[in-house]
Length: 151
Image (tube, rainbow, N blue to C red; front, side):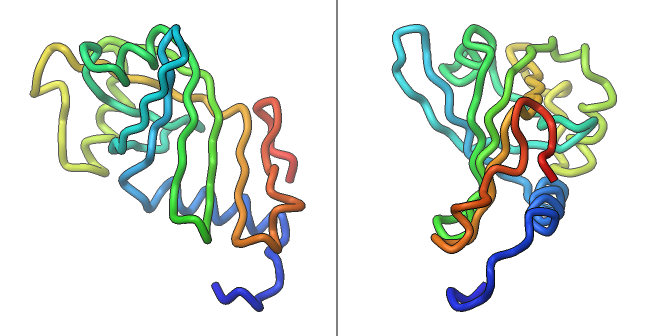
């Protein structure tokens, strides 16, 4: 998108976000521990059942933070095409999310259920979504608040 292009309408921003959730494979996952120490890593994901599903080990900082903190911020794209998703996290055992696991396998080609038992599933239910291209779209960047689309 060129910097001189007009801002997208909010409905188009929502559709662009939904398209990215289907198309993209990687997302930046930001969490914090109980002391507030931040952690940010890229993970594979799948958009399934109106939630973002992640899989990582419960034994690493991200897995512990997702489980214990119950919140995450997800980020897509570069600084000129931003999507931020703030959500609440629910943790599932490796065998407790079969439909999400099937969708994850179809998208990424990796089945964590065939890997280490230390992996777990994390469902991130979006509570807030922001999307913008450049400064010209900052004004209407909030397209979801309190878990409901505003458009």
